[in-house]
Image (cartoon, rainbow, N blue to C red; front, side):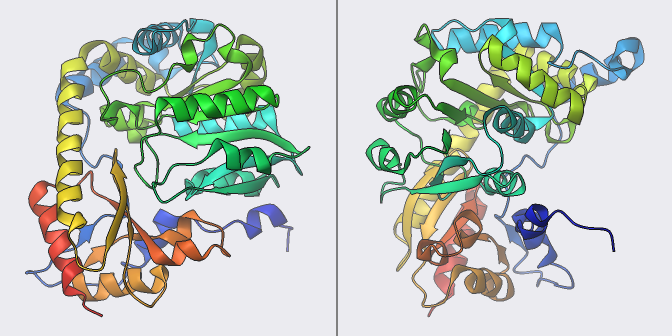
Length: 391
């Protein structure tokens, strides 16, 4: 048998796909249909005008079917640099923007320029599982940084984890899986720590469009030398329902872009032209529509907080963007509880063990509930079903 890379073989299976396999062969009673809170990626197509723009481009623009520039189309890079410069009150040049095949690829490209086998990256826990998977597959050690009871990481604790092999610190805000929004002064504290030690600060803001705060979530892009430390990641998928088109972005120094281009050219050559055309159309035409999407997500967050805060025995640790992180009251681990919830109350959720190291006992006590695709009535029903589990 041909060999298998041991780093790939040792990496855990994709959690969302694993959870979907739990559904095989299952049926649910008509009065208790499946409530799927395992994933919060948009399940509806983009708004019709955006779809029309993509369809028209497919017919009228021959270049939409060809390779494009490796770092992304110039018009989209320019538009996103202007958007981020305006939103954060800083200076971002088009040359500091790369367009990627989704935000996951932005993370992979960034790591490829920073670290290799045997190096270390600090990840707050609970972590986004695809980040951990990629580090495992590259034989890069993920160093867990446990969050506090408020689901926020501590720069002081992170400082004690830095060693000679450390290359970067990763923050996800609003967070996946916890939903926690990291305060601006906390993000600045991590920036200062990373800059002091010559590390990169990777800031994944996939869910920035659904942040509950009205102003800039941080001031890092206002700093004159931010590119020496910061790599900021973004996703068009959640904002404009473009998940199937795979359009993400990263913002970094021009010097790092030289290395980013090498990675992207070897992996995908260029991001989908139709996806980039759709992303640009959304960025320039759907500001009001996106504001409405944000308002709806914030309404569902409020409903989730209200429904779960008084649930007997359960503890809502945090909620934001698409996610709630909850501590359950049972004497079984979260993987067994997740299976029980599927059988007994027709709820599909991901256990906390999918977001933490296998030897971290906190994983067994928690679940991630993705509420973004559940309306207010469904959220109330979710709480009712959770309450019905009993002991």
